[in-house]
Amino acid sequence: MPQQPTRGTRLYTVTADTLVAVDFGPRTDGAGTPGRPPGPYRRLLARPGARAFTLANLVARLPMGMFSVSAVVMIAGTRGSYALAGAVTATGLAATALVAPWTARLVDRYGQARIAVPATLVAALGSLALLLCVRHDAPAWTLFAAYAATATTPNTGGMSRARWARLLKDDPDALHTANSFEQVADELCFMLGPVLAAFLCGTFFPEAGTLVGVVLLVTGVLAFAAQRSTEPPPRGRTTVGAPPLRAPGMLPLLAACLAMGAVFGSTEVVTLAFADAAGHRTAAGAVLALQAAGSGAAGLLYGRLRFAGPAEDRYPWCIAAMTALLTLPLLAASLTGSLLLLSAALLLAGMATAPTMITNMTLVQRRTPDGRLNEGMTLAVTALLGGIACGSAAGGWAVERLTPTAGYGVPVTAAALALLIALAAPGISGGKGRRT
Image 1 (tube, rainbow, N blue to C red):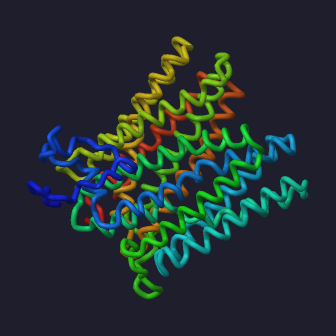
Image 2: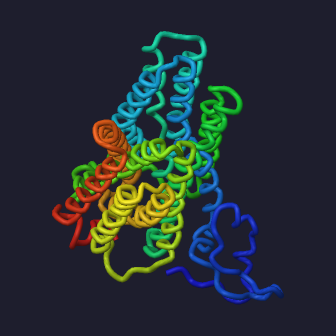
């Protein structure tokens, strides 16, 4: 366990903390004398090099929520076809599912800076090529080819988690706090990214979101890669462990990730359709933002808690809570049809999301063989993205064939499936992971 600072220490006097973390307790009293000890997030970010790579990673991670929305707005606005825009982004997602684990494997083998920088530059060129093809009315097939090139974008969140795992390998409580912080960062970026992209594309010109996303991605990755002191050492070709997919319990965890991704994708589509049917289409973004805000707040609180038992024991309970709370939007929508009550229900449902994902990522980390952590985390993210795509399709089908209210049965079913996997699959519940 990290030691608490003693009276008179100057370790926590850096005011830049407020840029990267919530201060969960005053560091001093009004007279400047030491007061309550700093909270776990402040202690986490006080570690040497932590602030630098965290800030750079947040800059690099924000575009992850911008690119797909920017592409849809840009293509649909100039070509007049949402079908084409959706097909292009779906192709990019499929390419990412194939390429991202391979890129992550190279990152683990040869180092973050050596692989992430050229991979990012290739992805940036793909985004710029898409922009030029759209602007100059190139054939439709060029849009698919250009957007597929963006699949080399490295998993910036996974690289950040790998650094925390190295820094905190002897402090499981602090690693739990770090995983919670990273999950909240994901929520924040995927909540703000689409909003920023829509604002840029609507206020300036259709290509503005893509341009800003490219600048942020390249700048953030370059700054992140420059922080060499916290970078995990490359493992090389001969010292890496077995493929993560062969690790005990990994496949059920990835299946649960797929099901939870379906929860997120279907909830978004069904909520948009419900708000539109209720005559409040413009309020749909605010409703979804409430869900993300609830998840972020719960994630910060969850990171402050300390648990005596293993994460395997908590995992089914977390999914069970998410499943139970997801029934609230369904009941609110079906019984009242009120968007206000639906918003409150989604806020509560979101509060169960972050603890579930934090525990899931913790289990993935523990089961990933040494030297393959970034690859293991990328597999989890890829499963989530695949689930989001499947959930979006299933939610859209339910909305069109049934009703928006009935569409909420899709995320409830997907959450129940994740719970069934967690309870029934060997290697998830009731046992300890490979890594301690």
